[in-house]
Image (cartoon, rainbow, N blue to C red; front, side):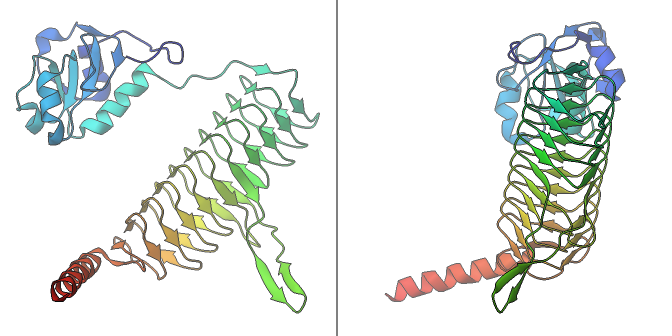
Length: 342
């Protein structure tokens, strides 16, 4: 059960109501009127709570769970369990995520401008927007309805922000146009000048950084990320893209829709990334590359060449994943052989 000091669940909901709302099949229709009031981990769930079983490795926890309702697949639901009602779905994790949003919907913040926030007279702030202490809103800024601006956030002149956007404390945004329903966590930097320098006889000369950052709808940006503005063109983050903590996106990078970037990934300037690309943690992607639609890059990989649509690569430098596995196996054999000779 969640800590009600921090989270307040909606509900309760009847099992039949949940099944109807998420389009899944309740294994025991006679329990349709039974109520549940929260979501919980499979091992810790108690009566009155909903959990999920999507991986056979958790079969023991499934067998002993006391949850009133467990979301699972038809195949996994055939395994022994403790009498919980089952909600059968083709994709249990996705269905459980939807149930989580039933209990914990994202509500619009109350309209509140803290007296210690500094808001320029020319800024336009939408209704039902909350602005916390220490925030600074610059000239000609436009903020849509239902936004939440955290403590000490700095939004510089001319920035445009859509509706239902959440910006975490201590974030800084400049030279950016941001869509609707974007979530920006704490300590994020958006719109700073990119890392563009030209060597000269007297040292480095910075290139003019006169582009913008364009962020599409429903993007999620984790804590401590840095997204640099474009040099001459724009840095673009496509809609529905999810960016984990500590990700660096260089100037003029263009990212398509529905992409996922795990923590500590870094994308150098002017690289183009297609739609629905998955990038693992700690990946380094060199500049001026093209990563095709649906490509997957394994964690810790170093990408130094273009990646074709749908290609899966791994290693440093990154190569097709089968080749990487062969290289790893061959290296292990060479080491074993060398050690055996010694």
